[in-house]
Image (cartoon, rainbow, N blue to C red):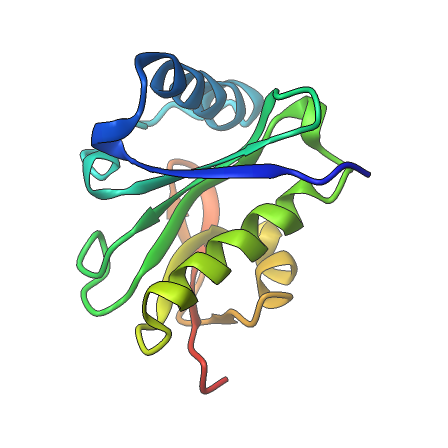
Length: 154
């Protein structure tokens, strides 16, 4: 199991190659693999910091975006578009990615809670990071989702 090397980059500082790779990965995972037609480019990328995880071969294999309070949840940070590529699965990269995302947000301001819209089948994965379900299952683009919240008080 290799360790990832991370870069966290504000939207305005992404290179065109990095942005292309991010959008390519998101389309591969969320549209093609999950057979889901939805609008991936949702206006939130501009406000986000983009967390990119590279393996030992300098291949981008893990990604998520870190959103400030109000984007999209008032009073909460958010983590979205969490993914690992097919080549990156089964190696613990998802765990590394979420650990790094949580570390960054806690370092930024640990008093601000984190809210995510998670695919329901990943509930236990996110519970492993201290998230708890907040509300009922809802349908988003034909996939069951739940809101989950992390606070330092949990």
